[in-house]
Length: 139
Image (cartoon, rainbow, N blue to C red; front, top):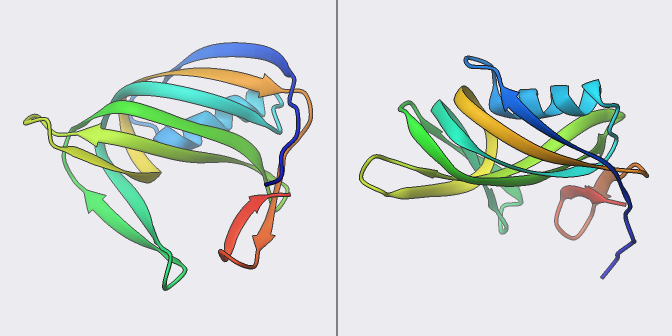
């Protein structure tokens, strides 16, 4: 296990813009507050979504598309640097009107309504290729 202590330098709340992309809005917030690392939680709803599931055997993401309104029952993630750019690693649990839950890595989704709580870390976190998983993980 690799770990380090992090110090929170600021906390923000934000309302995501209707019609914008969910993950891009979180990355825009990180850009606005110059956060090279942080942690966020969010909730709200999207009009559609693309979730990714990581196939550990094939070591590749499989996209699943949902062209329907969905509640964002829970969303959690972190911001770090990937190839010098701020990247919001975003996981979400989405729900349909009947309560069916869908979950995975939220790559994109059109915001209907969204609220975010973001904690900015003092020191940056960077992602790099991790050979055993073929993922870009924190250094």
